[in-house]
Structure formats: C-alpha cells, structure tokens
Length: 166
Image 1: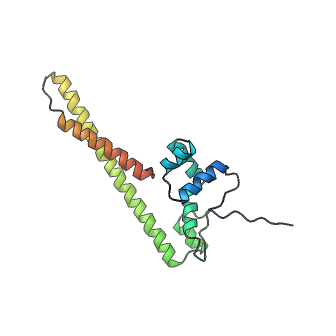
Image 2 (image 1 turned 120 degrees about the vertical axis):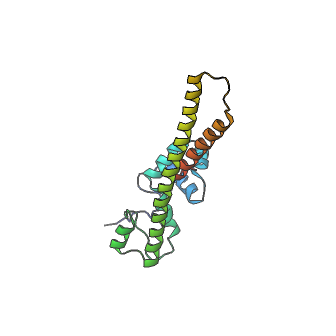
Image 3 (image 1 turned 90 degrees about the vertical axis):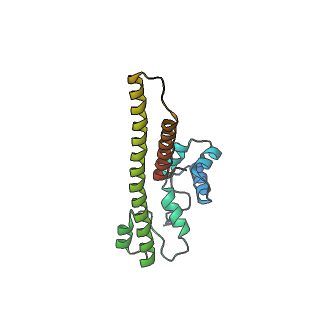
C-alpha cells in the first residue's frame, strides 16, 4: 500500500488552484500583494482573501525556517501550542513570542492612532457644521483641510499596516 505524505507548507497544497499557488510563489519571492494582484489580474482584497485562505504567512514562515531541524507545523495556532507540541527550540520560541508581543503592541498603537484620526475628522466636521449654522462668510479652511488630510492619510496608513495591506 502506497502512502502519500502531505505536501510541505511551501509546496502546492491539496485543493489549491494553480493560479493561487503561482501567486503564493510570487509572495515567497517578495512580491507585494498589490503587485501580485496586478500580475495575476485580481483585486487586492481578493489576493488578501486567497492569502488568508491558504495561510500564506504561516507557509512563508515555514519556508524561511526550512533549514531548521524541526519545522513548524501549520497546525500550530500560536507559540503555546508549538511549545506544547515540543517542536521549537527555546530560541525559536522566544523569537516567536517577541513577534507576537510586537504584533499586539502594533495593533494597540494602530487602534489608538485610528481613534485619533477619527477624532480629527470629527473636529473638522463639527467646525464645518458650526460655520454653516452661523452663516458667516469667512472660514479659514486651511487648518481644516490639513486636519482632514492628516486624519485621512493617517487612518488609511494605519488601517493598512494593522491589516498587513501594503
């Protein structure tokens, strides 16, 4: 009886379309998801959906660590699971924990900055509403435009960073 082993994480997975795997290989080669979408002919949100469905980040991590004696299983959901399964060295576990801590801090910071961007937009909206209610002719809009632009740019950048969108 012939047994087939599961493909390595960086190899084409069972059920993965050829086009999706080609996109994954581009991701492994360092292409941005936007560039992949442009090349493959799909939208950036679709590329992100494919990446999530086929666990590109985990597979890429496994690919980068393939020279290590004990590969990281895809089934490992977090550092604790990996440690329980006993497949990582202490140094690897420490590195994964640092990454996890950094991601948590980045998410908290991103959420705080997104909140600030929303507050800036609210201030702009309130100033415009107040101006309309007073029916005055003069309104110095330069600070409002700067605040709106800053809030919008900051919000988009931070939301993209928080979601891993380039």
